[in-house]
Length: 262
Image 1 (cartoon, rainbow, N blue to C red):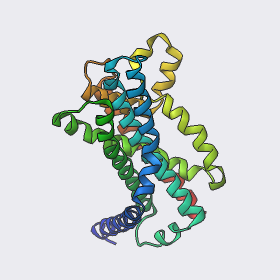
Image 2: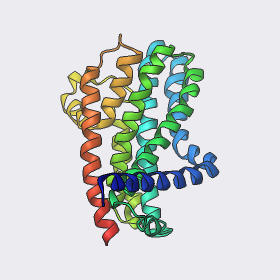
Image 3: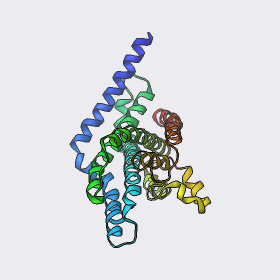
Image 4: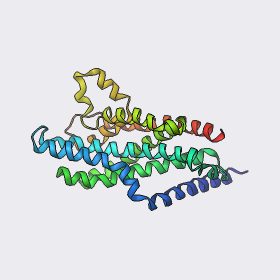
C-alpha cells in the first residue's frame, strides 16, 4: 500500500467519524450546551455581577474573571464531552465497534473523537462569551477576539486530550466518581478566578495550580485581554498547553488502542 493511499484512508476515516459525531451533536444541541454552560453562567452571575454589586469584589474584577471562565468552559467542555462520549460509545451504545471496522488505523478514530471534543469545547466558549459580556458589562476588541480564538482552540484540544485519556482509563461504572474527583479540583486550581502570580504568598497552592493545564489557558487569555493584570508569560502558556496536548494525546491514543483491542 502506497503512502498516498494510507494517508487518504486515514483522512477518510477521520472525516467520516468526525462528521457522524457532528451530525448527532446538531440534533442534540440544546442538551449539549446545557451540559457545559450552566456552571460558568452562574459563576459569572454570582462572582462577576452579584458580588460586585454588593461590594464584596472590586468593580474591575470582571477583567480577571471573564478570561478564566471562558478558559474553564472551553477546557472542561472538551474534557467532559470527550470522556463521557467514549464511555458511552465503548460500554453502552457500543457504536465504536462499527467505527473500528473502518479501513483506517485505530489512532484515526481516537484523534477524531479528540477533535470532536475540542469542537464542543470551542462551541461552549463561543456561547458563554457574549453572556459574559452582558453580565459583566464589558467587551473585548476585535484584536482581542482574534488573539483569543487560537488560544481557545489550543486549550480545547488540551481538554479533549485529557478527556480522551480519562475516558480510556476509567470503566463506565466508575466514571461518575472520577468526574467528581477530577473536575472540582481542576476547576478551583485552574486560576480561573484569580491570576496565578497573585498566589505568591501561598506557595503550596501556587505549585498545585502550576501542574493544572487549565491554569495556562486562563493566564494566556488574561495576557491577551487584560495585560495590566499580572500573568504568566504568554509564550510559556502556549508552550505548556501544546506540550499537554502532545503528552495527554499520546497516552490517550495508547489507552484507546488497549480498550479497542480488548
